Amino acid sequence: MRMMIRFRFPVEAGNEGVRSGKLARVFEAIMTDLKPEAAYFFPEGGERAGLMVFDMQEASQVAGVAERFFHGLNARVEITPVMTGEDLQKGLSGVEAAIQRLV
Image (cartoon, rainbow, N blue to C red; front, side):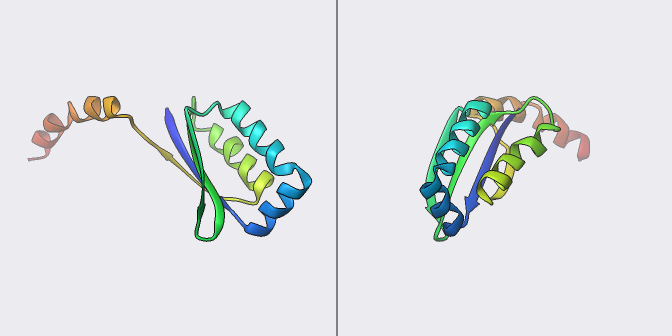
């Protein structure tokens, strides 16, 4: 299932990570492990932040994915299932029948 992870981490943790080289190592490992189809990095709320879209095979992977960001970056994390336009069209194709059963 396609998932999006949004993360944000404190300036102090980021600064120390840059100085020590840990930030580069953590992101290199995350990118290698998750193989995201998209990854974006940006400032948000005065902190370093980003998002990645990646494939998750099973729900039990949530813990392992989140822990990389918690331990590696002291980050706040949100993981959300997401769809492409094709996924949305496929999903909407059954909506009318589901609504009719409710009426």
